[in-house]
Length: 438
Image: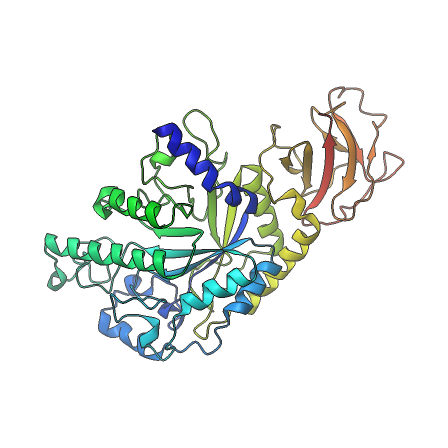
């Protein structure tokens, strides 16, 4: 049984492990107060205080085709949109609630427009669905760790109410699985405290998912949140352990492997600034250099990077985010062969950067220049040819005069003579393509 589960997971995730780079999109009513997607919880706002944002929601600048073009230009291969976040507001036209975009001034099914636009650009599509719901009257409130009304005993719930919520939650997931064609990812968020696994009726939910969308990927958060280890990290994952692990705001130091050391598909979800939802006061944007290097780090550890943008109340991705995405995309246009379909190299991390590999192609990602030739530890006699990936120009495999003490290491030179001083052609990340002997 376990063997067949792992084989099925490997088959489902083949495209995911090829893609390596995706866009996360956090967008909803919280774009109007613009203090992050947790604003209701952090500020303990009752439904009545949050209602004006529902009444005002009118994203006249929403152009999912423009989002899709930006993602494609950035070199991303898939995207995940928050169909419903913790506040319970639905961007899709659910028949099970009135708390949805079609009842706001927007008056449209925004999820449908998203999936159609991204598919038109040839990108895989995923939907995020929060297991939490701070709007639903049957979701645990008083005494819950996160609910905005957690300190108000007037919001105490009876146990049987939670079963009604689960019926609602399963019903909405069924709507997403049956109403929008083939989905590539369902990104659940998140389990915590006793609300985990079978508390969500997870086995029942997984049977429905595999019946309706057998090839769709799910993350591991039916079982855990990002801070705890789930059974996906073991050689005996549960039925609802998911297809990939989802570390949040961190790149695991050694990647993610099972108990026996086998590779596990994983994806680091990372914000571009410090917030998931739109927060114009947050200007702590990661540079394109940081994004490029973190993408390389993920791939060098057999992982993906899911990079978040938070559109504003009008539905526009911030200019700062778009500028970073364009720069990353320009780098990938010339160096994408070192990312897509690549993974970990069976070599120690080099002093000057990182390795990725695919087949007999080894990609050396130089983050800083060497003094003289670039030392390739342990590769003497294994490198047949070296070139600069960005332009295909030849690099020189020649041992410098001072390398006698390093007989097992190969050396690559940007220019002759071999002791020449140089600057990296691309200070963000210069990629050398090394063809290894079979």
